[in-house]
Length: 269
Image (cartoon, rainbow, N blue to C red):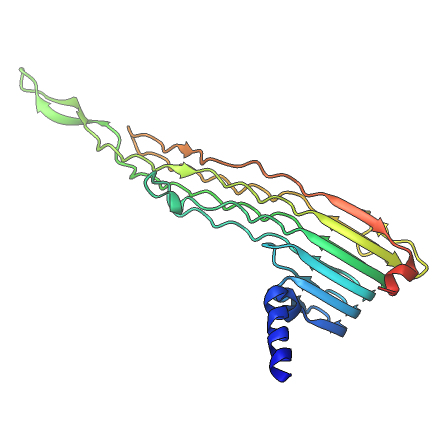
């Protein structure tokens, strides 16, 4: 009989790996300024969630982030984030080294949140795309020297000393090297928030009053494009470098979906 139970348990763990990885917290309290990173399955299930001031819950942007919390108390300036990472900066403009041309920003992760707010200070939900990597700055060429006029003393046919002008040829500089354009930002992630509250109305995206009580700020835009590199300046009688445009994708904003649940239906789940 024990062998049968063992085989059944092993089958369930293999068939439903999330059951073996998702940890269910009866109470999770995140200290002020603490960053709580969700586990590898990117799912967090909590009966009572307490976020103190400036605390953060961080989901991986690579897969859907899921948070289910029956009772939530949020302090001031707290964050739930699946924001994409910044892309790598370029390290070369050489055409035969595309792996050194930098990378786009990482896409923001999609979030699916189900929360009953017992109290709410201010909460930012951030699924923005990461900023693109900065372009490569070209190097200036050697300046060189310019042609210049000078004089030398010679005797004329009559034997008098005269100053005769002549030109000293300069040394050409060297060309400046090329720069590369910045890379695209990552796409913004989609946010779905199913929520209910305890006798108050949350305020969404009123940015002129930061950290107002009962406030939720939703950030889901595409990441910024990285800075273009600056071509190198050529020296005397030489060429300046050029800005090499790297193929770029067009990043798009995420979307937001808000679903207000009846308080009792959320608490009973």
